[in-house]
Length: 334
Ligand code: NDP
Image 1: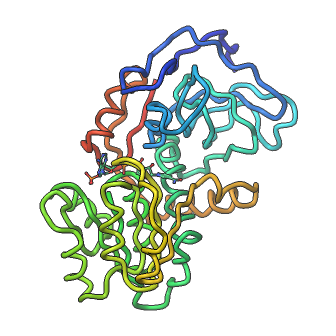
Image 2 (image 1 turned 180 degrees about the horizontal axis):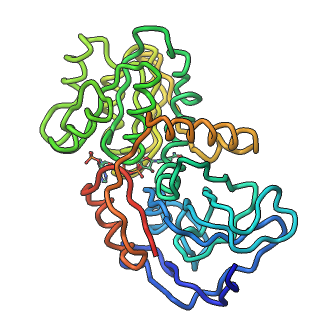
């Protein structure tokens, strides 16, 4: 392994705000490893909507901050006691400070990238793929529908986005009848290509009316909503009796406080899950990661890469994501 340099490039935030607060620096100190950590030279970093929340301050973290939650690369140094991980291993992880040349990662947060999966695929799939898998199974309890013939009606908002694509593909494998919403005809086509049986153009169609029409008045049994504020009230209208509303994001802003009495109208179950709370134990992380890798290898999950942005152009990537100009996954590369 080449010697570890003293400084590195990365994206630093010193104040919260718009994409302009993402500063590209080339003189950030390389992290010093602590017990149980390895140093990963990042090859591809995944961009996720959560990165924008830490940038704006919607989600709090001490500043200055190197943001970013997911990457894939090669281990170039190890502290003692890092389990089965050694220099030269190809790995992927979900951990803080990924928008940088090097990241110190606790060995417990790492996974070896198996043969047959590229670093690009791994960095593009971990956070959004595990979100889709854990939410479908644990938030909505949908794996029970596997192999049971006609599945429930499920609606996925932003079905052509990163998480939406993973959800549509995994729910289709599970046997659900998937309706996607997306902004514009092109995104709707993509949602259908990914396995949505119906796609509703949220810019030009009345989503609630179309859902009632498609489901013959039944409504949807499950809603996956990462859009948040703009779609929440419509979700309550189009959900079926005894339905499950999985509200998991804030792309249009956080959902305001709600009156729980509204849920009684149809005995609705409301969930607000967070991926990281489904992968707390080593067993949870390892088993879900192994399952995701199998889905990737079999091609059942195959997310389109929207673009690979140079790390220094991260502000443009955030603007594109927040401007609804993207489909599938956005990646960064040095
Ligand atoms: P996406 O790739 O899905 O991009 C966001 C999409 O949301 C846009 O492309 C757009 O799709 C749709 N959208 C609708 N209204 C707006 C709006 N006003 N502003 C911006 N976008 C809008 O992003 P991600 O897959 O990274 O994340 C999707 C959501 O899932 C986010 O809210 C994120 O926080 C959440 N999430 C939550 C997790 C958790 O643990 N709770 C884990 C992972 C993701 P269109 O134009 O087609 O409507």
